[in-house]
Length: 556
Ligand code: ATP
Ligand code: MG
Image (cartoon, rainbow, N blue to C red; front, side, top):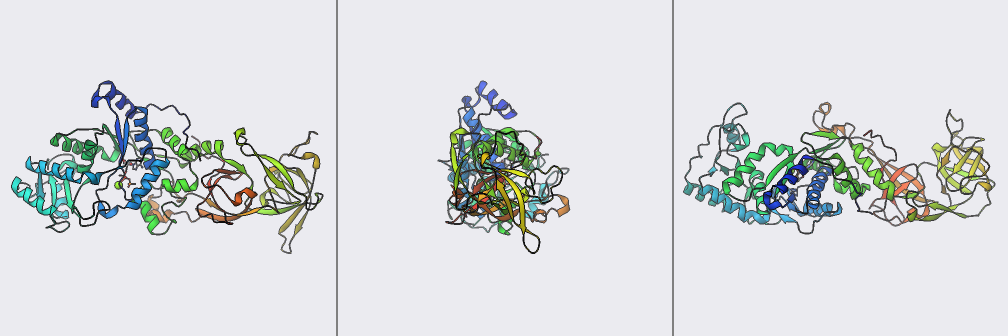
């Protein structure tokens, strides 16, 4: 499979503009250092791919660096399985995932910084319950009330924080809070929680710690420790930026620029690890890499290419306001790539037998076929032709409707790469179903054309009955029936909008070479779309996934 990215000129966008200005003004010594910071609490999805392409792409473009950093500060939900899947996905997209970094490696530094804030009188241990904390926080229209623990002395706070660290309190009994401003119009600044207690073992640090930093506190410090220059995140964090800035300024450490952009939303799918986890856990899909999932693992299994995803990320660009992108736009980028690389083969999904009555019995001809007419370098292969072949049932109509140009009694059809056949007769079973179509062929039409100016409008794919290989073919549709799976009609429960027909398995007949498909290779089944072998393929039992159909409904 190819990983090359088609040359696309980077489009101007506001993030590029900010970075270019910073370089020009010598900010951060004109360095560019970005990061992609997933929490390893699930598999990555196509929204993450956007962020990966953006962060690694900017680093490449400005000759800087991009860190893959695991934001692993929440032990209860994280695991090594997720870490491994994320490394694999980032590498598969074509970016450097060789030296991932871990927020958990900075736990001691986070702790030392917390001590500094306590000593500066800017953090305190608070014993309010979760419910009380919410009540004291106030609302958008009412200022908050100071916690009764807000004025504890530095010594008291140091001792209590030490007790928290030593495991002397139960989970939820107390927290460490930053002392900022309970009347701030920005609720995030009303003494946010910095540390909480958790006895869940951490996948890397085990039980060394029982206090864990909260996202807003840890995240900026992670960026600062790594010398990040531009910390790019999604719009929900715009309101958190003053807090990001407050922590770093108050600690007096390196202070990256946080920049927010609109997250990717795609029609007919969901973009949240938590919700995707629900689909996996409740068995609505076969796993995180189910080919219907919008996860990178699912897309890979479905036959998406890194080049297509990178191109998509570039084409959708970055914006300052949220919107939803049509799934069709992703498919458009995919087809553009697959069309260049896919090997063309013939597969019949709904077969009916066609007998060529004037073709010698037991004769086999090996006919030339292009592997990819888009790319002559891919060469040709030889496909077997015999007296009996299979065609699609749809390519025959006993009583043709107006404009039907395929096979019907007395009419001719071109068999791709082979001959013209003329329909003489149909055989039926007792119930009236067509069992065989009897034709004659014109030996002069070898290769699928003649010099006599004869017009044969329809062309069909086919497979030789004697050589056909049985394939399980999985045809997919969108996982959800609604553009927005969380729309109100379902009462917010997206599982009510699952598409019951998102997977359809058919037994098909294909060219001999499909008996041993190459994993990772893209195929075009003529007239049916792009396919790839599924890892469920076993010896003698090839299984294919339809990656995407041939036709685009996207009107971009
Ligand atoms: P989820 O809700 O799916 O768990 P998250 O934002 O909590 O997503 P993180 O693991 O924290 O997931 O995300 C890592 C990075 O990916 C963050 O910088 C985040 O902004 C970015 N990201 C996540 N979802 C999207 C999306 N839909 N579009 C663009 N970027 C995204
Ligand atoms: Mg998250």
